[in-house]
Image (cartoon, rainbow, N blue to C red):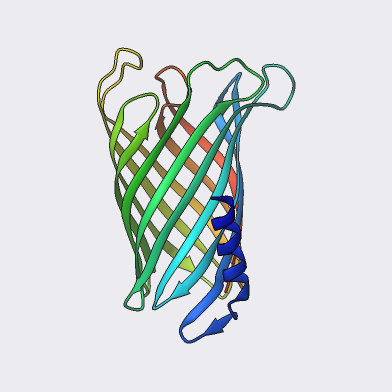
Length: 254
């Protein structure tokens, strides 16, 4: 396997940037966000998210891509800023444009959750193989959406089976370089009941209001949101309803 990986890297490196409908690294992206929870708890004051992604190879209108993100939950149990969780999100897939404003993707998504500087006996991770469809509608009130459905190929704790996700966002007021927006997200998960992690099917949801500024491929957002989120703890069931106040920075280059 190491020899195959090295040979693949060398083969990709030998490709020209663009030739005969093939493009190497057609796009790259980075993202960073942070938010304060309200109300706070000892192990949950702040949320931080940092990640990056890239289209690896585009051929015949299909792009193979990869993304990697780290979600960190910060509290104050041991010190003023004490990381209590580190959750890793990795995704690989194939995406293709459908018309001018839509995109379809086949994805494989892996999540691995870890406690930081705390004992953890049980592995907590899962894989989802699924499909995603996203698009946008320009106009007086531009609207964007994304829909996804997938099935777990691995769930080490919790018995997750099917996962359906949805996102809807709209720009309420738009200017030359900025806009006020609203957005909402839902995530519904079916669960095989287990005595080791007793819980049933659940629905995560959030609503958000914010401002967005763009310059080239760079984006800055400030937002206030409310969420109902399940599985906030790693090794025991638990859900929280809370507000978030934060910002995001992003970049997409082509």
